Image (tube, rainbow, N blue to C red; front, side):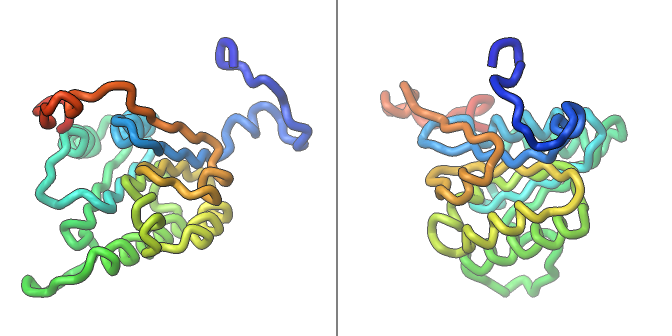
Length: 201
């Protein structure tokens, strides 16, 4: 794609403008670092366009405070770009009221999160979605990949969706418009170094 120009133009009856504004499904997968980071970079661009952004974190603990969360929450509340809603599975999801002693399995929580994503897609709640580490519930069989593909394929409006995580299944990558595989060439952990502030979070 020299200079950002497509290598070929499909005979799909669409104008260049129509094709350019089609909703994107993106998948960031592979064993390398940077899948979520790249997705949050896309979310920053969406925020800058004034689009409502919805982030759904399917695996990370509620106690894990990522820098992107704080930054995007502040930006979303600034009134300068789009709004930002951030949901974590580890918190039991923010839209469900529970008793303090109620504990549910990770599988149930992942299914619950996917049901909310489906509702939001149907209602066109957000213009840009980050489904962070959503490949894992599909990999583990908690969420049916064929259902995910069908829902994403039939979503209304102009809603962009980026999904992150290792082990992206073939039906998902076949559907996606953009698939990036992060590969590891070298990592500090190879030398026994753990994650550090400002780099991993």
